[in-house]
Length: 442
Image 1 (cartoon, rainbow, N blue to C red):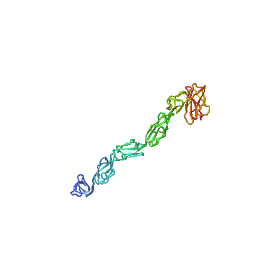
Image 2 (image 1 turned 30 degrees about the vertical axis):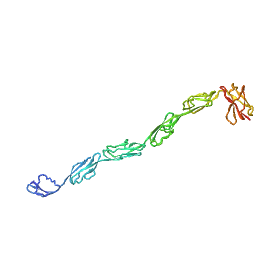
Image 3 (image 1 turned 60 degrees about the horizontal axis):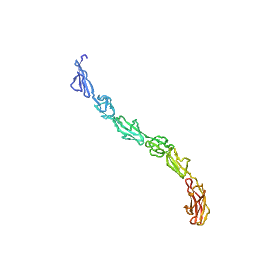
Image 4 (image 1 turned 30 degrees about the horizontal axis):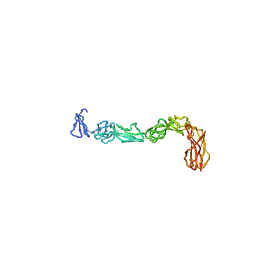
């Protein structure tokens, strides 16, 4: 009004005395408050009483911290009026770690505290990540070492080795690692791998030495434990198979249940043949009469040597030279040398004048010798008593007339006798004998 305001007075929470307003009044005590105030003008007039009720709310502090191996994203600390909501914060783990919980038990990394009614100080806890390493073996192998491992982030696993079964070999792990032994280092994730194996492939090599060949696949690749294909050592002409270098003595072979590589050679030897040289009657062999000669080789020289008064005729295979050497031998050979006499053949005949006589009376014997030999002293008379086998030369006079001869003879006693004349032969004339005459002396 026209008189103007002189002052404003108030009473806070009915506390006396009355205060005159001059500067803003701050009320910090939390709770409900009442303020009564009025104005007076310069004329001393007092207006009607005003009453205002108000409340003072508390402010709370929200503090979010990290316990290590992580951070808190968002505002911390926060000042929040009682009953109000805090701002969102998130617990963010470091690499290789994961959020576990807040110290007040909340298990969500992101949080917003609502209707705040008290101060709050919480810490986010983190734990290191762990990873599982799983190692498995495919068919025909096994794993040496711990096949399942739990490993902290960034640390190393324990060594494992893929071990092939007998007759197999390691190929690779399913993640491409090609060493059978492995240690996964600086692990940052789960690992689940399998080792693969393959059957061993073995080489069978068959070769032929001098004097032969090998038929069949001479170089073979065979799975461990499987059978090879048949091969045969074939000798060249004039040779024969001896053995394989591993001691096998059959020319054809099939190696079964193969467990190791094989490299063998077939050995051959030349065929050997026997050359036999024999002498027939009236001769000998000069040189080796029995020879062993390899196929295609030459025998040693031999000679058929006739006895005195004989000459070489031929060998039984038709060769007509006494000295021979068989060349390029390809078979056994057995031959005999034949000989013939070089003496003049003689023939004696004998006739008894009678077939019986009395004791003491001679019997005349006569005959011929042809051709006429110049010296009859080589003729003798031989007798054999019946019942015996012994011929005896007897002394008697033989008379010659040209190529005729004659003599007489009687035994000292009785009996039946056989009488024969024989020519002993000379350096020119061959020996001969007559037939025997049978005479009985009574």
